[in-house]
Image (cartoon, rainbow, N blue to C red; front, side):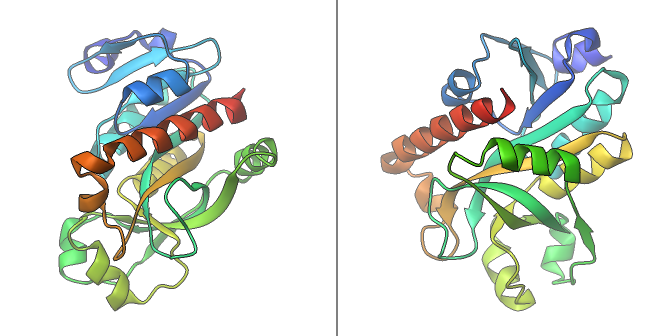
Length: 229
């Protein structure tokens, strides 16, 4: 089943595994992955140091990918994805190590404006190690809100008035909790591609701005490789 889903045998997965919701030439280049094999849902590949799993966007896909890694030799999981800044003190291109993740990754819960009840944390030992390894790089720590709707994120942030939130993504909470459920150490590294209410995702993704996103993705991928190495 694993090879059908991921395109590789479970034995090929290394002890350190990077999970990302999407794949680009910049990620492949920055993480120094020579090639990936495509399964029915996911893709996977390796370099000499770690494995890369491409899980697709959204909490469900990422969470399921992590659960499937239970029967591999993976011991450390690193989520690597994009995010939107909730504070103007952050700028596009900033790279964050998530120290706390508020979970609101249900579309229905957001639409009903329900309060946040679940908070998830990275593995402390792995978090401290990555933060130390990135001490001479442009890496900072921050708090993330995982949402189930990009359309609703602006209004939800205003109504909940959670001033702890630094960035917003769609996967980190599911990733952290799924990792906990299979007893794996896990952290999330996010790079900022848009600024909520000021430079929103639908502007950042316009054709004339795609080169900027590619540049940010390549820079972030290279930094992550250096940190893991």
